Image (cartoon, rainbow, N blue to C red; front, side, top):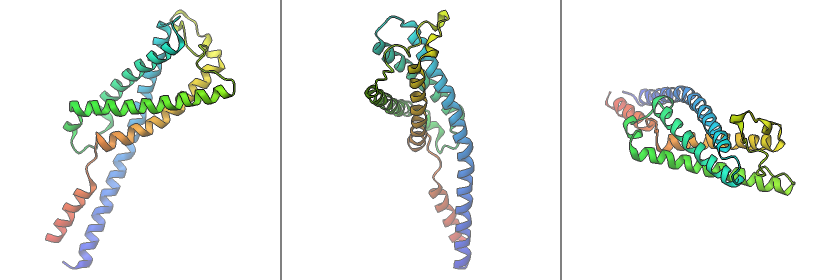
Length: 203
């Protein structure tokens, strides 16, 4: 086999592998976003529900407990669908289902929560400088199970909602990249390419 043929086969193998990985990544990201939206809805509704059930309590206590409850529900929903549907291009699917990987999933999610809370409280204190307090109780959806939706007319609620959506977007990026790197690891293109190179050499 000539050196020209060797490099041509190696180049073509690498290009084909890159096309395969790119083709698999697009649908995977779409599935991730769909489940991210679903988990976010569960997260947000849990926050609303817990806030309503804790009507009359301290505003900061309501915010803390409702945030934690939303996080737990969101992580559970996300993990289940990540295993069953989202991440299909995985080198070792069984390893991704182990207990250690589950707790790593929770840890990465908790880091995402810290990022989210950092964005929220950072925004909160910046807004305080402008005289806007989004944790003054007017954004807390108290009594929604009793038909009280008056919080929807609160500017503070909508500022809170926008910040929530922005932080969610940033955390979605973190969650996808971190889970792909440490949990749902894709087959290494290098390993496949090395095998194909060896095969080409032997031909």
